[in-house]
Image (cartoon, rainbow, N blue to C red):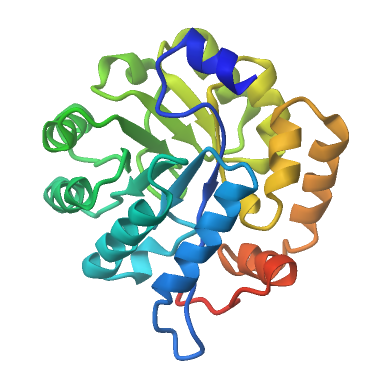
Length: 260
């Protein structure tokens, strides 16, 4: 299925990628080597892409230097095995461009950029100018990164695709039916649907703990999709990313410590 999707449309990756957690020690110091090992293990288990320092990766709690260093080390470890995507979420276009420049220098394969409320078109143009030949994905999650990216604007922006983390099935259908851009769901509940309606892939947090189930759900396994839904509900009382880190610690013995 992954090979067929890649042939149909030029996309940064096809299939399931992980929105990677960032690991910390008991003193809340970043554990780069541990995070890299976790990423490499997930790639060995079938992840097609690794999103570094996104929302699940606690980007708002990391310094710019930590974000860049983590990207560089992950690139060194998994280059050629999976696509490395750096999240360049920032409070301004200038900051996003600075993070993009550092991520490009670190050797990443793709950028994920949150929108800027001032001027959406100019924001993505400037980020893309810095990114050069690397693909840029828009990040649509207006609850966390307002104002979001309207479906009607997707094809007019200098982006390759969009990660939609709203969990809204109606929007997902609008995206895949009206936009020529590659669409990635960020919702573990929509993996099966995203694949069925022609989405390019997924970047999901739950793949930190359940990579195999995530892949199975995207590939059409309804039982796997139902199981993922039950797993996600089991940690609803915890905020992101503490919920994902608890599941990941239970599965792989990684640190559950969060900074946010």
